[in-house]
Image 1 (cartoon, rainbow, N blue to C red):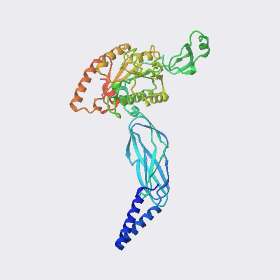
Image 2 (cartoon, rainbow, N blue to C red):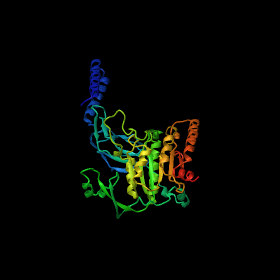
Image 3 (cartoon, rainbow, N blue to C red):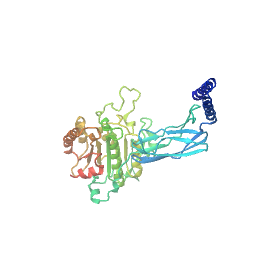
Length: 448
């Protein structure tokens, strides 16, 4: 559709020529003729059409802080004029190099141009590029702008990043990392030796269900029965991660919750590589034991039993267990759907009866939850000969906030006072993720 620009030019051209005729001024008439030539030339120009944008990337998997390069190819077959192309990006993808918004000039020849730009993945999650928008204009503005979108997103799966402790080559450092002191017969890879038939528990493989035994008792109680087999003895570690609201201390990119996820992955990789069995549980200490904290208040529709929420991973070994933990953490958000630490410990007891695994708690110790933490620690059977049965990782998060130096110092002193009330029971690792790696903090503090 024609815009107002050519109409305005035509009006000006007619006025100049008419004025030249009335005044007998040849210069004005020649000027009007030039404007008329400009007008006809503009109408002979066709704005760019037939725009196509092809993505040359494939969906991929990355880790936090990885760089990823996008590659698009722009083709324009017809017309002459400016062509603008923009790719919508998530706020969590930081542009490092290049530009996701470009303006090109289309000559008479077909245009083929590559657009390349690099982003940094700042936070875990699944990100899709938005619509690719393009716009073409007439070189003289005689016709309306043409616009279009192409919906062909690139999906990036950004997993949490962890530092691999296997890169440490010093054997003395390895010996300083806390490990269980004995093999656990109750946990391990199932063998072919039949042990017993018992009721189904959350996490049991479906292939172990004994359907005949289940059918025999279905008339009076429906509870699947499973075959239990003897298991090989392996050392076991169980990691408990806090999902309380205070774990979000910091900003949207760097906060204690994200660093807690990093800690879980780093410790999981270390112990699984040492052929240990690893269990993982999520808890929330904002709610007392037995409370209805797992329900969103004032929301009657979300009445979901707590045990149905997948907050526990039974102990397993190998790469598959690491992948399960990483997938679980991929979509994790601070939530009240998880049980208290006391209830999470009770859930784990069904898998570690008679055993003494190394229990690692990842949380933020604060005054309002200190008494609850003490009570929960009393539930854990602590034996001095097994060192250490429990390890608490306290994440220092005040430096992630915009505190002045003096306020940060006061917070540090408060932390020391709180930690002293816990260290008489269990070893505590104070980890400042802005200054050191987790393995450095553990090595420096756990064996003092």
